[in-house]
Image (cartoon, rainbow, N blue to C red):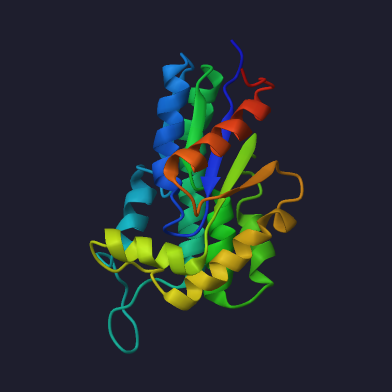
Length: 217
């Protein structure tokens, strides 16, 4: 059996990665392609813990009271979750011919943890933690102005999360603009996500068709 493709969608919070992961899954499934959508943090045990941290339900003791774990701890947790995600879900499905679409991957770790640390040298450390992570066949970065992403986050917000900081999100947007410089061997396509959903979805599908060597009809 031919191995399935591994596709990743990335971008700042509010860029639409979850929405377009779902749309892409539905579009490929409608064409008869075996496909599975997944996400990071994953639904595995470490991923569940990370989600509890992100929403403030899991904290650690600090000098001035309870606090979220440090960026170093978060980087290690994300790397551990990724290994579990790859071994338990991504690779087994791909070996069965299933195309995997992941809402986020190690690009998010490099972006979020390095900017949280405020030290460019952290990029290489986080990349080293994830050096055995299987590389995607295609990564689609949804580009969006920080102010638009902020408005979307406010509209959908059910509670403040760990990385819901306006200044951090602005720096993340700039980081994602040149994310390929940190992953020179990866196939990365940028898509303007500040448009109607169907227009964005069309460009996402175009990138996937090019990956698969298909011509538009």
